[in-house]
Length: 288
Length: 298
Figure 1 (cartoon, helix red, strand yellow):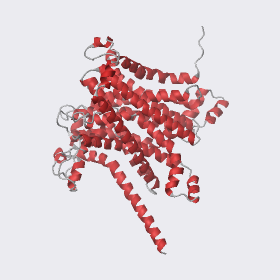
Figure 2: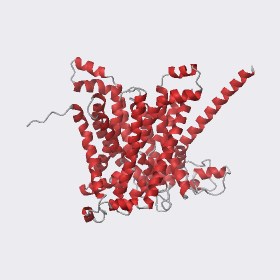
Figure 3: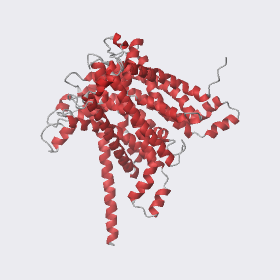
């Protein structure tokens, strides 16, 4: 009898411990984000208050209003940055996906000499740190006169995204059974038709999430953008964030508001792709 | 004269290779060349002066460079190992949860959506010695009276950066290891239990070998963009105070753009590239080994 109840007690204790650990972990993960959102809604006086004000006394959207009302009122041209970010990210994503689809298909469906080496080689081009790459790119771009243009940044981001896009898309095509396309070809499709009508629709969701991933990489990139952009012509949001810092002061509230503007699209998109993303990265980990 | 018709995979891979050659490989060759010149952005003629290994000798005999190099390696080693452990722990916690799996998984991915520069900024805000959340909380709880100079004192700043780095990347490990745990067949675990394994033995000899490839995938992905730490450090301390949190990447940026010494910076950049490649190749090989161990085709 005693054994029984002590075992039950132990089990209950374990369960409680598990719940508490889980709660603490999640709190630690979410805290910084919540803090940013909260700070963007509070007046600067409250953020700077000493002793700290824990419970927000008044919430307002002033920071957002002044941010979007343009230069002069809020300080920084957020709308221009937003537009630049959007144009650059979308264009580079579309191109990277087109190229990555061709490459990923080649890795998933063909056997050729030096395949594994080639794959590693592609990945290695991605390891070059952005800041190291920015030095020669800065020099070349300066010669070509494409510094501070959309084109320059788009080109750089396409190259940045290709290796990872190929890895992901390779994974998604591997999940589509080879037999399906072969059956379609036996039924009279050309390989081209079989690809578009059978394999592409099946791998479609995966490819879409690879696209979103590429979009996020471009959307968030800072090291390259900070050197290759100069003005409102091509500055992106991550670079624009620095506009809130002056020599010795930082407009915390404005920065928090811009941070929220940057996160919201990223949040939405990541939420949509989370399932496929993991599937694409790990396919082949176990099943080849 | 007739060219042999190129094979299908060659054709398919051609665009990728062309773009990467144009944007990555050719500029890198150029920078490799310029690392042998005293090139300064302000003096274009210096591009054609060849000085042999002088830049490399300058770097190798520069104490500051070695300190930054050592600090970068230290940061990466500590960060990657801790992220791995914490990610594993987090994945196990979430896998055991009986309810709310979907919500938990989504919450777990939260940090992945933050741009590294945002991570840097947000932790700079939280670790601010005067108005930051961390100090406020410590003072409110009565743990300390003084404002701890998180980002101003060298060692504390390193810890703050490490925290930011770990916060932002643990979820990569957690999510991939969780995928491994979920994909795992139940029978071997049950068999192990029937054979009398303790929970620890079951984990060590049954679960872990199965999850390992997933952990290595996470490692490979992480090592592909370890240089993301540049963004975080650039915002949080910018290598300061007085170079006490200088990493290889902030040092490269400072030498190149503030001092305009491109040749020297390129020589440094080659060291950082070497470092990244070393990390990636190492984990890629581990990944291949772990895959073949559980009988996967590559």
